[in-house]
Structure formats: structure tokens, C-alpha cells
Length: 272
Ligand code: HPA
Image 1: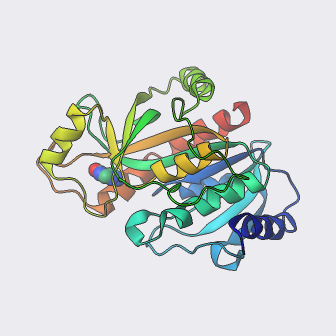
Image 2: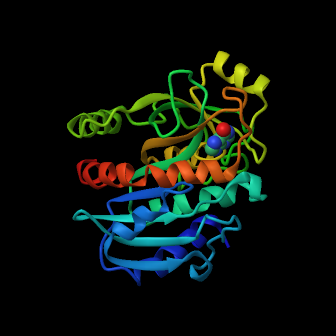
């Protein structure tokens, strides 16, 4: 079965179960999944029940597509995502994003937990992603191109929409929410970086490092979707503070900031 055929089957199955046309897709990172609970009139579709959909393996990354209204705006929330470090292929990581596009959605907000590389950042900050550096050395578009999805050689000169960034800045200013901005560096993980790598990433122009987002954004841009990316700086990257990193710390910080995150997203989403 061709990829396009599979996508259509998945999209049809989802469409038969939802009553709104989502305007925007939202991917929620570690500790930020609770936003899905703020949806009204929502339909909860477990990944394992959705035809051709991959299923998540990591603890703390629940897998469900939740479709409903967020402050009056119909959205499709991917609660739980697929990481390369879990052993998924790039195509698998891209699949849910392509399904969003097949559902007629052309905007995506992607959130993640990331380690701060920029010395001005502190744990608990949110960072608007202005651009990324792909140090995963992998790309979901390698292989035969599916022309019905997008072009062979997609342009990434505006991977993160300038227009959506403007809206994100404006809404944050209105809430007196101070946001950082910067370059997200995509690493495969699952190890955190070494202190030497963190120094290198800073020299390369990185502001935060994480293990997701880049393949998803590439898949979204390929399909012509506009992207807004937001990182929760859950920790300072390795070697910046005298303490080892742990997944618990990452999740704890994201959970601690979740009220701020929810307040921001609830106001932001309808304006995107
Ligand atoms: N490095 C990479 N990925 C991460 C980090 C980090 O420090 N924190 C959360 N995700």
C-alpha cells in the first residue's frame, strides 16, 4: 500500500470519529501533555487504536490523539510523540504529522523539553524556536519522494514561520510572559550531551538542545504546513551546573511550569 493510501485510510478513520475540523495541530512534549485535558468536547483516540499509527514506548509519553476545542479553537493534539532514540525510523516519526496534513490541517505548534545551552537562560524559561540545527544527521525525507505530499528538495529558509513567531511574541507580551528565543539543536539522544559537546553546540550557534522536533518540523514543512516551535528549558545542558542531568528533573521542571504554559497556549492558539 502506498504511503498516501495509508495516510488517507488513517485520516478517514479519524474523521469518522471527530465532529470538528481541527484548524491546528499541537504536539506536546515531556511534562506538557496536560494541556490536552483543557480541551472541550474532546474525542480521545489512543494511538494503538488508530490504523497505521505507531505506538509510543517511553514512560511519561502517553500516546493519544485528542481532538477538541481549545478556548473555542478546534485543534488536534498529539499527546506523546515518536523519537528516533526509541528506534523508530524517520518515516514513523513523520507519519503523525503527515496525518495531520491529510486531515486538512496546515499549521502546527510543536513543543518540547530542551536543555539550555545559552548562558542567559534558566530552567523554567520558555524559548520560541527561531531556527534549528539538525545534528541528528538523519532526515525523514530520505528515500523516494512522495510528490503528492511535497517537493523533493524542500526549502527550509523559514522552517519556523515568522508570522506565527510575531503572534507568539505579541501574546506573550500581553501576558507579561518573558520568552527567550533561539536556535534548537536536534540530537538523537538518548544520552544527554557531554560538557564538551555543549560547548561545541554553543559555538555552533545553538541555544537549546533536545531529542525531538527536528524530524517533525521537516515533515511538516515538506507538507507545506506552517510551524511554531516552543521549548521548555527544563535544565541547563550538561556541564553548565555542578549536577548530573536526569529525566526526572526534565519532567519536574516542565510540570512545574505547566500552568504558565497552559495560560499562554490557551490565549495563543486561537490567534494563530
Ligand atoms: N539535552 C538534550 N535533550 C534534552 C535536554 C538536554 O539537556 N533536556 C531535555 N531534553
